[in-house]
Length: 76
Image (cartoon, rainbow, N blue to C red; front, top):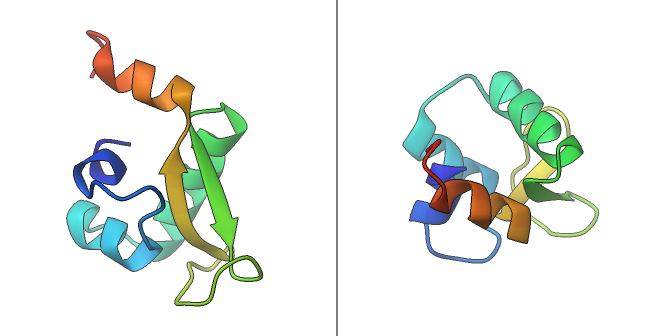
């Protein structure tokens, strides 16, 4: 989530997120999927945007209000 916030755009592309976190694209896709299920991020699939995507079709991800609040709290 911090990588998404650090890029300072509403929905950074998956390859830009991965350039900061430097993990396996499949692992990043899984983590973004879990974060979306928990309500912290909103993922966009390749059908919604054009560009390179992760193995699970995530092209871009943006923080939700819950995600922004989580980053502002003491946990992160």
